[in-house]
Length: 259
Image 1: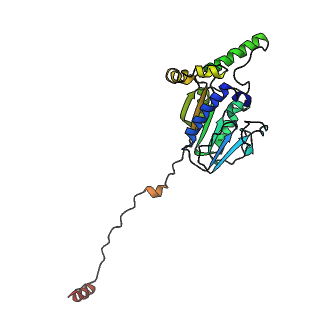
Image 2: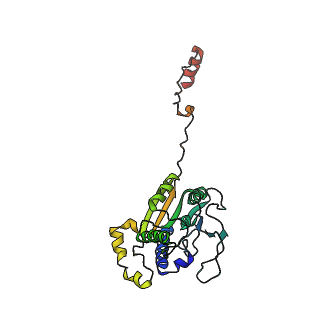
């Protein structure tokens, strides 16, 4: 994955995702935030939370451009945090690379506080890039392995609508969704720049067919309504005035005092 992101299409996608992260996390407040995977992408650099961590499943190799060292080693399916402890979790391509994306999402639900947010990026299989990837895979099966894949041959690409269904089942509400990278599946920097005009056309004519998608979702927790005890709801009876009987002697003494 690291080597692909160093290619012209990889840098193009990475720049688009970095811009979306900077816009989305700048106004998300809290105390604890976590990015899982993708050290090439600094998704929390525009965030102002006091505690920000990067978690990787392994220490990256010491090579140029490998990204910063992780703050902790952890898998997305087993995060070392207690329940309701994180305000923000970033998953840049983490679900695609996870061996069990369902479990990874449930783990995010566990560690997020109520009204906490998760930000997810992924490669869109319903795009020009995804169509080329499927065509090359079909050719490889028919030709005995010949052909060069355009996208990394790792994990499983998860469609946008499929991911929305997963989030809805886990009581997430999609707050924002963006698609981007509408240029065709070319490999060189020259051809990438030649098709720059397709960005404006794609956003206007086929917005959901971008090569990458970006989702911000909020964890909703259905609250309970506390019912007051029955004795609290009963109207209290007003205290009635009771006449006081007085003797004739007491009345006479009272009248004299008043005089």
